[in-house]
Length: 65
Image (cartoon, rainbow, N blue to C red):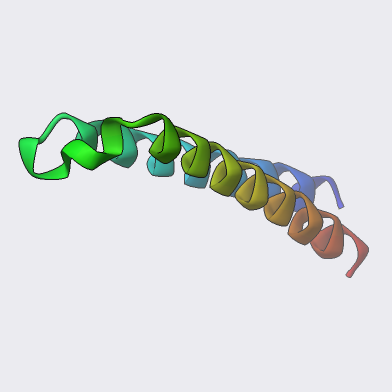
């Protein structure tokens, strides 16, 4: 059970880190200048919360199985 908790945290936070690092890198390119808006930041934050809670739920399900 502890092993599932550990791997669930690693995968969830690793996925979130990859998501945010990709978003930050894309915003630097002139081709993706629309990502520098407040609306894009808001959507990214909403997607991060969904991703985080999905990872939390999957971690709990892994622990219970």
